[in-house]
Length: 73
Image 1 (cartoon, rainbow, N blue to C red):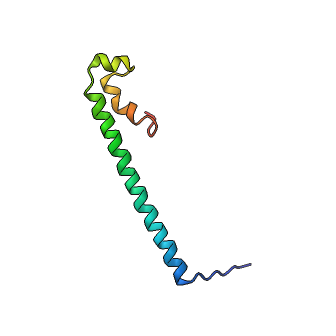
Image 2: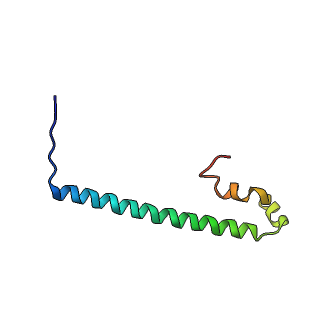
Image 3: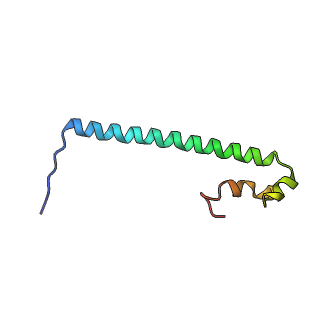
């Protein structure tokens, strides 16, 4: 059994526009997330080794700590 679906050109335009807007918003969210992570890394690198130890970190683990929810290393 075959089903034939014919979408009007107006619906196809709306769907394409929706996909484009979704892609742009996703891109902007990714940029903002990356910037916040970079700021967090810079903040932690500015700490002394003693201040990092209070947080349970060593300097080599800062990046791993900041990206712990994205990558499992």
